[in-house]
Image (cartoon, rainbow, N blue to C red):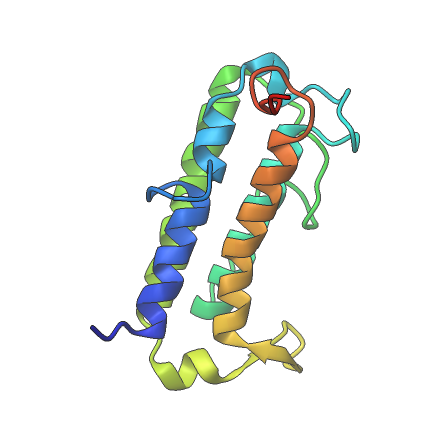
Length: 169
């Protein structure tokens, strides 16, 4: 069986985010939806971040890469940079709205990826200033999947009740 790079990248995006089963452990969206509203904004964590802030950070990179791939010019509604502060509205409704928005950015990134041929995937990543960066378009998109997986582990190890399971003796 032959599988294209594009298909592998889309599968990796879904595995890391939560739209596919994994053999290695939990993924981002189910981890986020398992948290209570209080846990989402709890700053008494190992690194001082909240799970909500990390979720917005992950959403930023989905938005950013999709915009770069599609030429999109919409603004990021949660701040001016990739690590914005906790939103002022931390209600359950605001959280559900955010998750819906992040789901849309995930789907937009997958749709943009689905349009790319092997030549485009292999081409250098170009930043907003038009400068070629180290690595390819494929590497940047895969980076979003790795980024989701990294922050899933970070959230799961924040010391929030019910997430980190203690190993037996």
